Length: 27
Image 1 (spheres, helix red, strand yellow):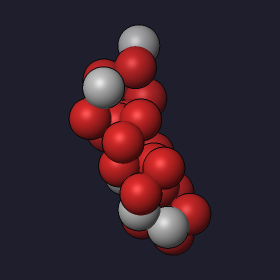
Image 2 (spheres, helix red, strand yellow):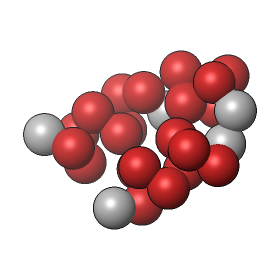
Image 3 (cartoon, rainbow, N blue to C red):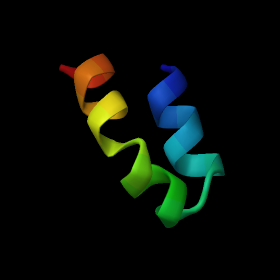
């Protein structure tokens, strides 16, 4: 849930930097 909100709110740059964290949360 947080990952989705962050990805939508945060810019692509942040998303890419936290891609590993988001992937872990999503997975």
